[in-house]
Amino acid sequence: MNANKALHVVLGAGQIGPRVRDLLLAQGHRVRMVRQGAAGPAQPHLEWRSGDIREPAFAAAVAEGASVIYDCMNPPYHRWPELLLPIAQGALHAAARSGARLVALDCLYMYGRPAGPLSEDSPLNPCSKKGELRVQLAHLRLGAHARGDVRVAIGRASDFFGTNLPYSAFGERFYQRILAGKPAECTGDPDQPHAYSYADDVARGLVTLGAHEAALGHVWHLPTNPAESTRALVARIGRGLGVEATTKRVPSWMLRSLGVFSPVLRELVEMTYQWEAPFEVDDRRFVRAFGGGATPVDDAVRDIVRWAQGRYVRQAA
Image (tube, rainbow, N blue to C red; front, side):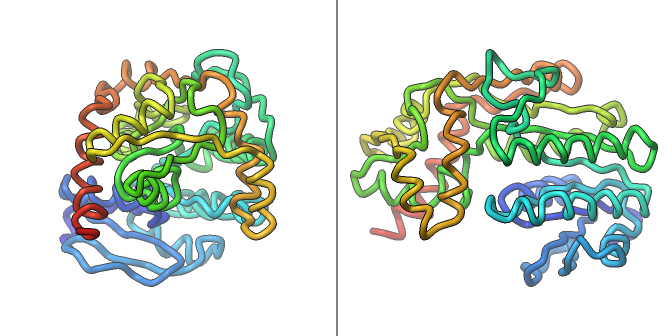
């Protein structure tokens, strides 16, 4: 690695971490990817570390020499009570020991049922166990910043859509179903407006926060397009793939039944409220401060379709 380039540490190699990594490498930075599993493919200016961020010695070691740390970790839903706060504490320890800025990815669960567009000033009023944990997580991070232990910026995003999102509603099952002529599935009302965050915009937003001192000490809603219905977004993607993609609601009783066999599905039940009323995200504070709004939906869908054609359509031909 070129020691003259800034070192950025990315915690988590799931859906957003690799996107952050690729953006940083394209900007000429050195990147250290940290995950529990095995190392990924080698690339110039990239190194891998495998281990448990909850271990203080490991956390300190992987952060050594870092200028910015990106906390993109997100354990499976059913393991949040066990892991969510401890791994975040590990990231805070890493930043405190190294002096690096910490940019943390967050969701919107802490706000609970929306009574209008969600902004950074919306009250924290969780209506789910996972939302309560997210409130605790926000207090943990912002409290550390207020004490001067670390310098933290938090970027919040809504549900993801985009390419290569195996753990989202737009994962492999989604494409298998619509390409087979079956309806896509929605865990609530598919006709309610719902703001989805384009995964590439989420990564770009986090990298932007990491580059600006003014971002520190604040919560930011990452760029997100205006809400449209899940049914409309599914139809857009279907048209691009040359199919008539429809959407059906998965009732809560079915999720509960399937949850007997799948702890992840069981945990989805309490989150269906997000599709029972308009779910809109106000990202104006980020856009005013840093510019660069969300990728237009048509452009995002065009990229998604190109990727899906190579991943699913051509492979099936």
